[in-house]
Amino acid sequence: MKKYDYLIVGAGLYGAVMAYELGKKGKSCLVIDKRDHIAGNIYCEDVEGIHVHKYGAHIFHTSDKNIWDYINRFAEFNHYINSPVAVYKDELYNLPFNMNTFSKMWGIKTPEEAKKIIERQRKETGITEPKNLEEQALFLGGKDIYEKLIKGYTEKQWGRKCTELPAFIIKRLPFRFVYDNNYFNDRYQGIPIGGYTPIVEKMLEKADVRTGVDFFEFRKQNADIAEKIIFTGMIDEYFDYRLGALEYRSVRFETEVLDCDNYQGNAVVNYTDSEVPYTRVIEHKHFEFGKQEKTVISREYSSEWVVGMEPYYPVNDEKNNALFEQYKKLADSEKNVIFGGRLGNYKYYDMDKVIAAALEQFEKIMQTAE
Ligand code: FAD
Image (tube, rainbow, N blue to C red; front, side, top):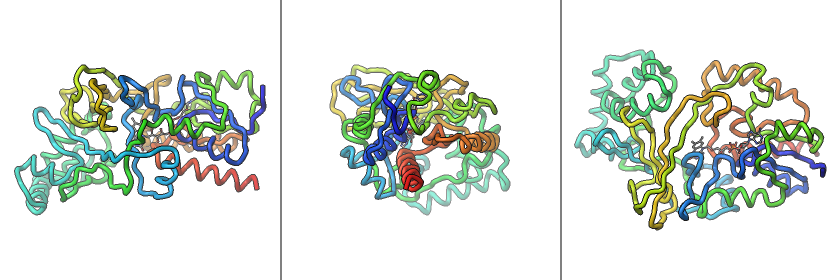
């Protein structure tokens, strides 16, 4: 078999940016992925002409102009602005917490009125030193916001009562005292027209790509296939979990095609009461202002994770971060292997941050090569 400069494990965004940049410098890359498709978690599947975000809704947003310009080389972005809606029992609220939310909740109009109510409700809790997430949320936002918009959603997300969760999970509540439903504060935002997969396709144009190939099996026969390895899989799995497994939260998606053209009138609807078992319903066509006759929705159920399941969100608490540091030491002494991406670095990265991390790593590679 041909010998490559780099074997890139994982055809997600991190691996793809690496392959693209290395390819431009004339380096030969073989990219493998254990899934049967490229693009990792940003993969979009075409269902009824709709780009379905198979591994969860992905909205590109950044304040970094360089990253925005970079990603725009690979796709044109539409003007989608993420403005989720929260459903609590039979009530409906705009998110993030802003004047539309407060006005609906309390029948008020001005920021001053909203601030007064929040302040009064905060004082009424009598909490001065929050000891758990429930107390922290009450301390920061008062009773109504906590009970209607935080409690049920957070308990579903973590699979634990808010009284059993640490206070530090909520550092602050992003209240906005303006009528603005734009979820993100970033300067640039949108969805690539045509979905995310073509972006990764373009990035991988110069590389050889093999899907349905697991690194751990592959390396048994191909130990010397490349000079160097860029590994974007799970760092603990690479070391055969020898120090123990890092923990994740997982998500289960229940995707359905519906025989109607508009199910919920918005791309993202959060269910914030505990009676509804799912956390969110995504209606994919609204990301691209789709006009198809049918629609596709995904209900998201937050779930426990065990080794072998799809890892989604790293649980970056003290225990897991300390374990990651130990794996990181092993990784640093691993010759000719670079660990990157969300699984290699055990870190929640938004897409813009994963691109920035890959470009930074690429620069380091180039500097050491010079
Ligand atoms: P991945 O996309 O996971 O790629 C890693 C690849 O490695 C995978 O394809 C995997 O199959 C492969 N792999 C792993 N192990 C092996 C092995 N042993 N052999 C071969 N291949 C292997 N970011 C945003 O900016 N906006 C959002 O709205 C947003 N929403 C998100 C929603 C959810 C539910 C999640 C979980 C993340 C979201 N993100 C969002 C973050 C975004 O998904 C990541 O930034 C990005 O996908 C990370 O890319 P990556 O290449 O590091 O990882």
